[in-house]
Length: 300
Image (cartoon, rainbow, N blue to C red; front, top):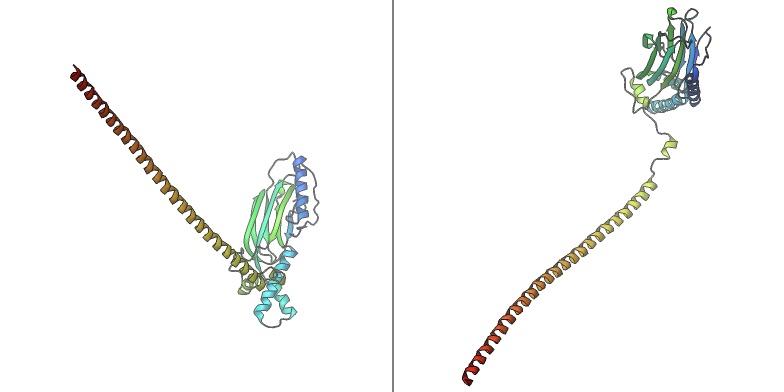
């Protein structure tokens, strides 16, 4: 993100600290500026001398160059003829697309003891001077505006202080102007057909290197065949193992049934033999008792 530029004619800048919090804020601002992602500006406004202060910001040069590369490629492709440099320059200068505007600021008194509110007015304008947003009597604001159709910039936010509130210190925490991707950009009625056509991303030669070539596809097909063969073999091996396990389970079940039946039969025959043994022995002793009594009576 390009660093914000401030237009402050005839106005001094205040650098007073407010304890540890102010020092921490200063460190964060320095880090933000070094990263190039946000604009962190702190200044004082003296309404008696100049009640108006403006800060401008544009889309970063790197982002806008990438956008214009796609625009030029699409413009040349759609023309289907050789274009002059003047025609290309005119098209690039007239190109407009959706941009996102993000602003955040807070106002306070430069005197740490003074805790009174310091409201100010502000207005945001685009690169053509059209007013985009305005509010009055604001002490703190965060704007996240998406879908505005415009060029690279600069986009300007102007603050106006009221004389009755005295000196005001404005902490402009961030001021971003970005271009969203073509997929995420909202198509507005303000866009022309040429703008919508030229907004489409163009694949560069460097990006084409990462696309799959024919030899890559053939190699991938060979790998897929090998994977398919391995899966096929593994599937039928699993089926064979299942059949073996099934036969083993059936054999174990059949053996268990046979053992159970034989066990019952053996127990039955043992019981039967015991009963027969009891009957035969009893009859045997009964016969011997009758013969003994017959012999004793004959001797008498």
